[in-house]
Length: 290
Image 1 (cartoon, rainbow, N blue to C red):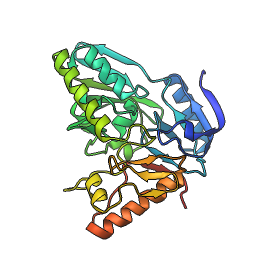
Image 2: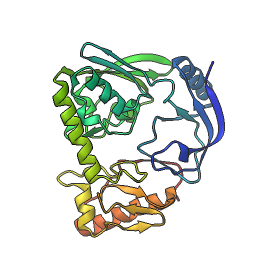
Image 3: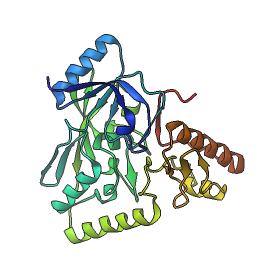
Image 4: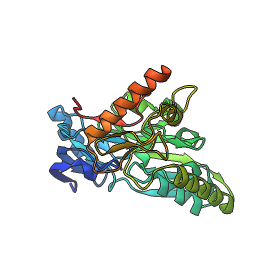
């Protein structure tokens, strides 16, 4: 077996917020054999791991994680293209898959250009932007369930807004098959450049964050509710509601996870107080924040 085992690994190295305490047990795996071996060890000890990719949607407690962490990035970062089909591993960066689609004149993944997460995380939460979502292009999902490798048709993944079946079941996503459309390279590039420009203009990309902090409430936009509540620039410790895009909470000055968590709570309270709307975090919070 070729996996690497590390004790007391700082999770600030593995999240886009650049915060978080240590993981007592951290596994870097290199292939499906490693994954099966580690899962066998953990199932025998009754431990349920946290599976991570790029850590772009995670807020890890400053107190750290007692659960084992499995890093999927290095072992599952393959991208294979055949005709109009892309098969990508869970550890592949989604924006790289989008670029590979462009290189092969394939349209349908332009929305993903600039999304910092991995394929596994994108499938797990049905990531999307600018009117596109993973569910629009997914054909099937590769997963490990109870030690068995399975292929799940996309229609059985229960995809909806920022949701998939993987959130409810003990399923480790290992890859995805996407069906795209042959298109004009010029038009694909134009769309990708447009989305990139919009992101740069409207999002605080110069600061560590987890992207959109809150899910879109039905009938509203989270960023507008936060702005209309007068919370642009609100700070707790080193965390701030971005004045550039109020839907983003950023680590602007060596914030702790506790700073970010407390600011999330403060924003939720203020928006509910003003508008009666409950903002639900899109960011997954792991560990003890009490």
